[in-house]
Each structure stands twice: as C-alpha cells, then as structure tokens.
Image: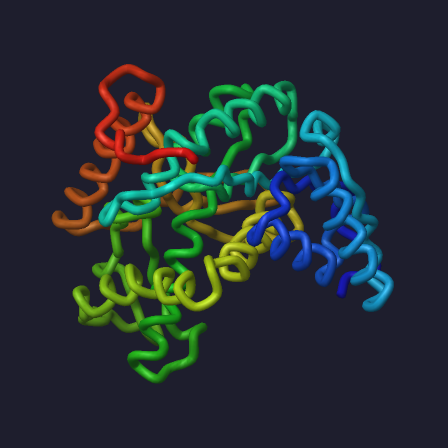
Length: 310
C-alpha cells in the first residue's frame, strides 16, 4: 500500500458492483487521498463511503472516502464513471450495445454536471466506446478515455498464456477497435517470449466472448476485472507511471479503442502494425461505432428498439 498517496482526489460515480470494486481497489492501493463517491441516491453513496471507511480503518489505508455529488468532483484529478441504469436487454448479439439507449440519458446528465472539469474522465459504462464519446461531447472535457479494450487485451494475454502454459509477462499482444463484437485481435503483432506466434484465432475469440458471460452467470456481472483495468489506466493517465494501454479515445472523426502511450500522463496514439485483414476489421469497427453514435444522437432510426427500460 502507498503510504503517501500519489493523487490528491479521485471521484467515482456509481455505487453498483463495478463502482464498489473500483473504490475498494483505490482504498487498498492508497492511490489517492480523498475518494469522492456519488450514486443514484445520497443514501447509497453514504453507505458505500461508510463501508470503505471501515476498510480503511482495518487496513491502515490513507484514503478518506466520503459521499458527494457529481458536481462536487470538478476539482478531482480524475473521475471514474461507472453508472448504469437498470434495463432489459433483449439482444443476443452485440450485447454491450444493449445499454446505449438506457444509459445515454444518465451519461448526458453526468457530462453536464462535470462541464468544466479539467482532469481525466475514465468511462466504464457500456457500450463504453459510445458512452466515452457522449460524455466527452456533453462535458466538453478533453481528457476522456474508456477502458473497454484494456480489459480485452488483459483477457487476450491471459488466454494465450494459459493455452501455451507460459508466464503472462511472456505474452505481448493487443485487442483494439470496439469493446464488443467488432473487437480486433492483433494476431499479426502478437509475440510470446519475443517470437511471433500462430494464434488460434477462433479459439481465442470464443474465449474472449464466453469469458465475461461465464463470470456474469456465476457472480451476477463482471466487477473486479474492470476495476483492475480502471486502476491501471488511472496510474498511467495521472502520471504515476509511464506505459501503454488500450483505451477508447478519439480516432479520425469517431471513437475507437486504440493503444495510447502515456508519458508523464500525456497520451500519444501508437497503433501497432496491422495486416490487411486487421486493417479491414479496424475500419469495420470504426464505421460501426460511428453509425451507432449517430443513432444515439438521433440522427438515424434506432436499430435496437427492442431494448426497454422497466
């Protein structure tokens, strides 16, 4: 645990499963001094802050959790958005897209509350690529990132390491594009112990699709994996350490998951070499997400009209 927090204050919006995992990770690592928590109700935020305060007392963490409102987080160095609206998802494919219409009003409200924020906004809410672009547009913030492809990359490396029975650190490879069905697995630049690998693409894709489903079926939804991706991204975006991570960010005139190399908190895109098929896949992801965002803004009819909020 960090005895002297590297960051003054971090805000987390959303006290559900992922919000709880994120705030718990921040307490354990001691990354920040002040931890502001906002939720759908003030009672939820206060309850989570109290539970985390107990955790701090038990572990000696230097973090000070407290309930807040989204608007109170304007002075935070980073704000994590993990808010999620209850809705019925009838999609069997493109499942993450099912939350677009349901979550968009809440994300617009959060963006309005954070207008003028000059720190980092980190989006967790799905569909993360669309919600990242939406909160950037409504807030006017210039440092907005979504965590989707960073988690996909972690799962990809873990999958290969287990298939090949090698240490995780021996695997280098990335997943970019969409955090969803249009994800691009960069097999042509994947290496193991520095050597190229003939990646079993179908087996890998099946595992990447089925892994979150298995987790959700067993414990309700993924939570600690996304929290780990949030923590890693925060350390880079806040300049605590340097490195590269795959985050949703502006790409041409849309948003995509792309590798960003952070140096002292400043990101520079660094898309790896892609073969022809991977380049086509990335173009497909870009076109898909751009069209989906136009739908979200009401520019075109909504193809996901079966998604209903209760």
